[in-house]
Length: 339
Image (cartoon, rainbow, N blue to C red):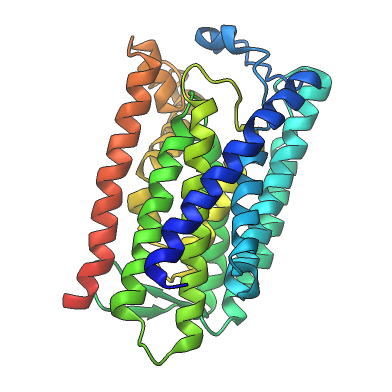
């Protein structure tokens, strides 16, 4: 199958699979009474308590199954990306399960979650470092420069995985917020893969083309699966993705960017995740140092809620900003060819 057909076909297939399993999963979660317990201090969301959670299994399963159907798992990069995504999803599932089992919003302890995230990050980082298609090199945005980071690649990539997964997890606080932002992220990454296959990867380098093709398949599958999930997750959400979904998405995004040697692209496509993460860090630091809050509530999307902006508008703003910065990020990669 040609590259021009593969990516759209994978997206449509993943959408169809996710749509087929979405309602059975929703029904199962309702039957199991796997409802989310909303934090007491997030009083604006008190009406959402009891909404089924762990919906991330819908798009995770659909995307991985799509990759398997189209032969993506024959490629080491796609296979490892799927494995890493599943591993982060399992970590999030354990967190969600504890919350559901004991009917509170405190799942895994912070240190337990960080240890799990770090463990997965170590394994995928070592894979990248030893893999001849990734190695320790990264492309710098808006330039044609390729930076060989040497041993520095290992701590850099570990921190990247831990940071991205936590940032996506922190952003998951409004109906459809992460699902819509992540869907646009994967569309940008899919377009980047298509561009690389058309322009930057030599025709004669068959092995490299297969690796880039497999990463594009992975990204297209997630883009399609997320679009189907949005059907149930858009406001008012029928099901939440939970930590199952948000941690998996963070791992998937980090894998795609690092495997394509474009980790700095995450600065652009993940702009709103960064806003969430930074707002929490600032809030906690200032409160501990000066005993006062900078925001009405952190992460920043909750601050906007308390400023009186409707949830649906905040999600729209975040998605639009993500799309704009995603285009800038895509230009930063394409501009390298003409730098």
